[in-house]
Image (tube, rainbow, N blue to C red):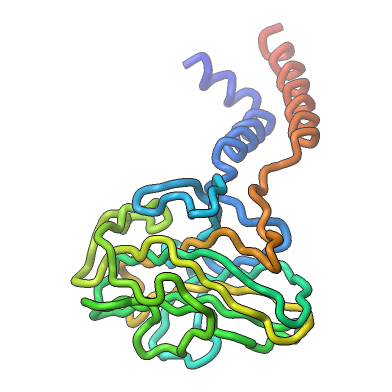
Length: 267
């Protein structure tokens, strides 16, 4: 009771401290890299449920999910129609010379069955926002390979493994209330898959990943991505947490504010 009364009396300062420390405790789960653009529901996360850390060994990965998204995501080339809500995440721009290698890992997770074939993709765009290459696709199937996605544009990247049957298990926090559930045959995950592509022409590019519900908005689907490398150099920061110096300065200032208020409160 005392703690609650104190916090109520501190008002804005206490609320701001709670937000600040709550953010720093959960920054990995809620952030996307600086310079990247999210439409819908995106974030960063460590090993969670059926999605382990990727083979490159980083401590976090990026993800998009249909859970909680009010945006619409449509496959940029060869759209299937009947898309409902979804999310996209676009990288910051990067420069490539002719013959530059673009490499990354992805893991597709769906709680929806084949009757409502949710799907995901990764596509390369140039600086004019024109699609350059469909790098991979994934789509819910009742059996057989779900990568590449049935009825979707043929990926031009080299995928390893090249075809992937669904693996059992949908327990993954980004699926929200559908984590661990399954609508029908076809639910599960792919495990980590490598995508490797050689960019033919010099220029400025960005990478976009997307995921969408199809035919309804129930039973969510997501896509994890990690290890984006351009000619062997990462374009994905390992985290997007506040700089320590900035955080400490803000925290110390708020602590001083709280001290002043508390002295007034208990004088």
